[in-house]
Length: 106
Image 1: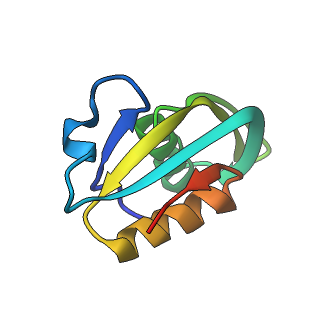
Image 2: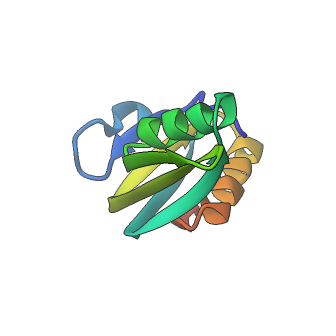
Image 3: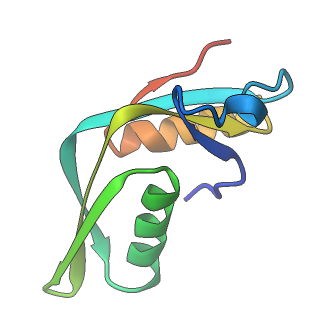
């Protein structure tokens, strides 16, 4: 999983002063409908939940059969401000892997 070293700002929430800095790479993302990921119980599951919460997603977790069902969504567009173009592409790939719509302009 990619480390979240960037800043997360809600689109239009006024938190974009850092996010709009010209040196930063911006990735916008959202996931309107609930999606469920199966995660191993323990550290991997906890890390996924923590990452989704840092991304300002709604998260619900249920445990059964030695794993966790992590249900999540992010209805409003959010913005992730990252240090480099490479990091932006890594996050964009991760977000897409988990079903998010993304926007990253060059």
